[in-house]
Length: 178
Image (cartoon, rainbow, N blue to C red; front, side, top):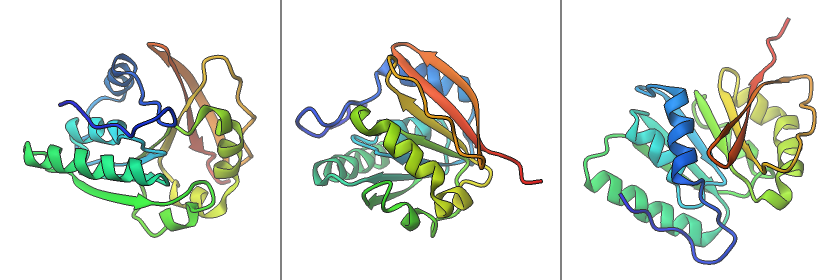
């Protein structure tokens, strides 16, 4: 289904080919809870819903993005999508505490603006409330292909870096507590 996207150059939707390859690698999402952070158009969350996710949460700070996500989720539901959607107008990483009131996710996807991605990644991974909320989740962080990653704090482990199409994704998990 064609999606609405916010006007301007601040939203950079994940390319269709990259998104498809990423989700093909994740397999069946039936019954899973997925969070789409820095959601933009909501394309990632809607892809998760189309692959069986029972709950999808979208978070973005831009009013234009929130408007598009609302329109896109309404269209998906009108076409028979059964997923439960929650749209949060929050600024991340500062608003990460607001996420902790939601049930624990299985997958968290984040695609922040590339210019701030390193700072956002460091802030989110260091946030105690976010870390508690993501106890068992895999965090998939889209990163610019030409940039390295900062080492994660001790509470997190970088499991893999995968390239799908022209996009690079870092997969993080909570480090098991001893």
